[in-house]
Image 1 (cartoon, rainbow, N blue to C red):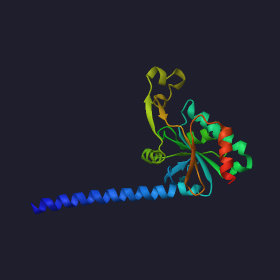
Image 2: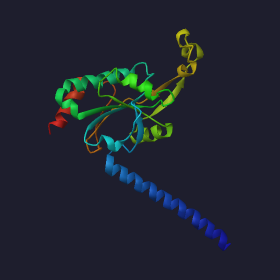
Image 3: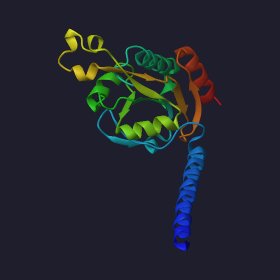
Length: 207
């Protein structure tokens, strides 16, 4: 009987210790990044491994999307690029970042071709799926696959790589503004125009 109690006590102690550690991690993350944000180690569109600490010293305009996105992603990327152009010299302190939620298809090569369409300083990031999921969770971003019927997913001109065209990804579409210290400042819902983004950033930089 004593042995049973000892085992049960040890089990409960492990759970309590794990919960305490988890809470401590959450508190540390909140203190370091604010309401949204978290640490990451991903691969950029040049093939270089980068972490969140590599971006310290610059404001980030960060968006979760994927290169096969038919509408929301290219629209948002264009808005971000236009906002940076409207900011002129001020815009040089802002680093635009596109984080792929589709690492299966968004290779380094895919990202390189994609981000170059929107702004010369745009950085694309991809990586292991579990790392993307963890980071998206830190930002409150959600995404999931929506599989397409074969007749939609595989048209004649897509027959060479049918597996790449069998799904879309439904994802949240906010753009996050992070400070040069890595802390969350604000976010812009989908549909906010480049002028409004540039105006708000200008006010922040002008303080």
